[in-house]
Length: 102
Image (tube, rainbow, N blue to C red):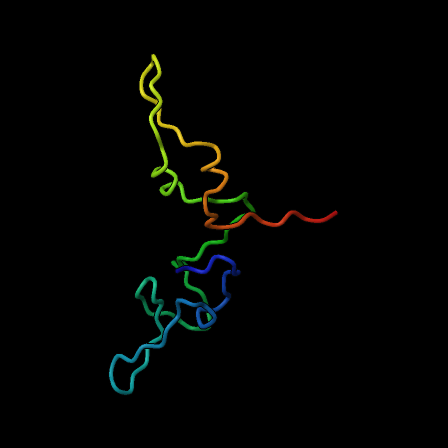
């Protein structure tokens, strides 16, 4: 599971995806476990998969909501719907940023 409540590391060695792998008996290589590429442990490569998450509202799993859809028959066609209480009670994947206090 990917940790979402962290700041982007400034060095690969501080990242949970960093690993030291032994290629041969005496040769160790620093790698990004997510990308399976070698890295300099004291910098962050341009291709780093971690991205900063901008301030946002509550994020939920839309795929999970699709399991709770039902069809409404309308003169214009079939409409898929999800009850509001199902949306309100959907598990939060990434919580909203706390509002700043004045």
